[in-house]
Structures are given as C-alpha cells and as structure tokens.
Image (tube, rainbow, N blue to C red; front, side, top):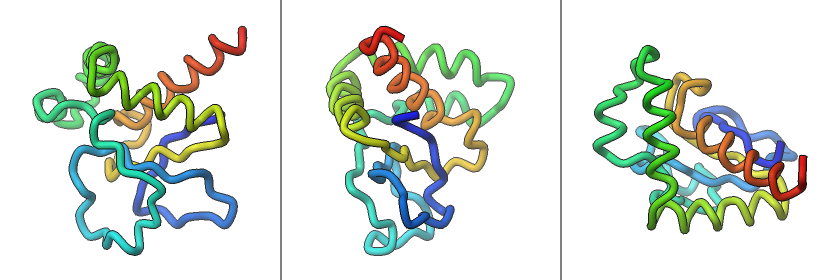
Length: 124
C-alpha cells in the first residue's frame, strides 16, 4: 500500500517510507531531532473537538471515522490531504501517530482514504 499508519515510537526500519507526522499535537517524549520526519502535517489531523469527543473509545470508532472523513472534505484538511495523496503517488508514506491503538486511529482512517483515492484514480 502506498500509505500506512505507523506509531512514531516504533523503530524506523532501514527501508522506511517517507515519514509524515499526522497528529495535531507533538508526541510526548519524542525529540524533534530524533523523530526524523520528512514533514508534519497538522492540518490533515482530526480536529481537536473530534479528537476529544472520540477519546479513543473503541465503541465510537465507526462514528469517529465517518466524522473524520467529513472533516477531510473541507479546507484546510482537504488541501493537506491532496498534498498527501500526491506524496503517496510518488512513493510509500508512513503516516506517523502517537496513538496506541493503531487500528482505530486517525492515521488508519487517513491511510484508508489516501489508498482509496489512489486505487480509484488507477481504476482499481
């Protein structure tokens, strides 16, 4: 897949993709020089209001995903998403997040959106 969600705390492999932090807040305990980011795209992260409402409650993930996808349709998130899709078309990207539950994270939703756009454009 061109885009995948990855925890920023996990070790970076030698062949790691372009590293893009997609959280609105800087992750605790991570020094900027050690993060080895290619970019920090705060604009594409879920809004503070949505993040607070979700609270990483698994029972709210489906609704969180729906609301987040709706947020991604409006600027500035939509503009950042367009840039992110272009980056993913150029090569693999790791969407970095501090979230513990990677499968039910904004980064996972974002990776699904990015990969979906790339598949649709490719006709697959």
